[in-house]
Amino acid sequence: MYATTDTLATTPATQGGRSRWLALYTLCAGMLMIVLDVTVVNVALPAIQDDLGFTSSSLAWVVNAYLIAFGGLLLLAGRLGDLLGRRNIFTAGLVVFTAASVLCGLAQTQEMLVIARFIQGVGGALTSAVILGMIVTLFPEPREQAKAIGVYAFVASAGGSIGLLAGGVLTQAISWHWIFFVNLPLGVLTAVLAVKLIEKDKGLGIGKGTDVPGAVLITAALMVGVFTIVKPAAELGWTAPRTLALAAATLVLLAGFIVREATAANPLVPLRIFRSRTLTGANLIQALSASGMFGIFFLGSLYLQRVLGYDALEIGLAFLPTTVVMGLLSVKYSEKLVMRFGPRRPLIAGLSLIVVGLALFTLAPVGGNYFVHVLPVLVLLGLGGGICFPALMGLSMSDVKPEDAGLASGLIGTMGEVGAALGLAILATLSATRTAASTKPTLQALTDGYHFSFAVAAAIVAAAVAIALTVMRQPKPQTEDTPEPVLCEAA
Image (tube, one colour):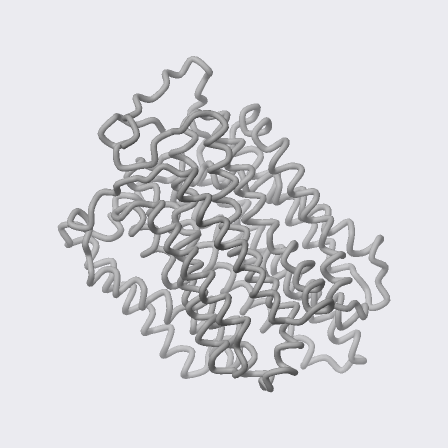
C-alpha cells in the first residue's frame, strides 16, 4: 500500500528509526487513555452512585453520555484528520479529553458529571479516530507495520481489562474522583510528546472535503442510533414503540446520508471506499467481534461480583491474565505470525479461539472455581484477541489510499464502538430477561442468564469467523525486495 510523493505529502512523513517508535508509543499512550476510561468507570459506578445519589436508571448515563458522543463523532473525527491534519486532531482531542477528565473528577452533581462525560466522549473520538491512519503512514514497510499494528491492537483491545484493575485500585485506595484525575498528567505528557515526536502533516485542506450536510447527517444518525441501543432498547425492549421510532429515525438519517454522499461533489465519506471487499469485511468483523468481547467483559465482571462474590480489586486482578497473554502475543509474536502466514489465517484462528472461550464460559457454575472455570476462558480470550486483532487492523488498512487513511481509521473505530454498544445492550438485555423468567434460586437464575448471553456472544463471534472465511482475501505478499516508497521531505 505504497504511495507516490504527491499523496504522501498529505500524511505524516516517515521518520527515522527510533523516533518513529517513540511516536508510536505516544499514539498508543493516547489510545490507552481512551480505552481505559471505558472500563475504569464501570468498576467505580457503585461508588459514584453512593456519592452523587444516582438512581439505578440514571446511573447508566455516566456510561451512555460518553458512548453517544464517542460513537457518534468517530467517523467525522477521522475525516477531519484527513482534511485538517491528523496530528492537529489528535492533540486537540487530547486537550479536550484531559480538560473534561478534570471536570469529571471535580463533579459534585449528577448533571455536571454527565455533561463532562459527554465532553470526554468528544475528546476521545477526536483522539482515537486518527491513530491507526497515522500508524500506517509512519510504518509503510510491511514487517514494521505489522509489528506496530500489533502494539496498537494490544493497547486497543487489552486496555479494557487494565481499566478494570486500575479502577478497582484507585476506587478502593483513594476515591472514584481519581479515576479521572490521573488523566491530567497522562494527557499533558502525551500531548507534549505528540507535538515533539510526531511530524506535523498539512492535511488535504478543508476546502477539498467540506461536506457539512453529510457531517450533520452521519453524526446525528450515529448519535441517535447509539442512544437507541443504550437507552430505550436496553430498558424498554427492542419492540417498544419508542425504540422502533428512534430506530426508524436512525434509518432515515442513514438513508439521507447515503444519498448525500452519492451526490456531493466533495463527500465526507466517498462511497468508493466500500468497493474494497477487504475493508468492508474487516468492518463487519470488527463490529461482530466487538459485540461479543465487550459484552463479556461487562457480564463476566457481573458473574464474578454477583455470583462468586469478588470485590472491585479482585475483579481487576481476575482479568489480568487476558491482558498479559494478549500483550505477549500482540507485541512479540503477531508480526511474526502475519509475516509467516499472512493476516487472514491468524484472523480466523484467533476468532475461533475466542468462540471456544466464550462457549466454555457457559459451563461456569454457581460455585465456580476461578482456576477451573474462569482462568481457562480468559486465557483463550487473550490468545484469540492477541492473534486476531493485530491481523484485523492490518487487513482493514491494507487497501486504503494514504489520503483516506484517517477516514478508514475512523470507520473501523466507529464500527467497533457501535458494535460494542449494540452487543452490550443485546447481551445485557438477554441475560436480564432470562434471569427474570427463571423460577430457580437467585444465584442459579443469575448464572443461567449469564450462560445464555455467553452462548449468544459465541454465536456472534462465530458469524465473524464465517465472514473471515468467505469475504476476506489474503493480500498479495510483499517481499523484502519491494521497493521503498518515495517520500517527501518534512516541512
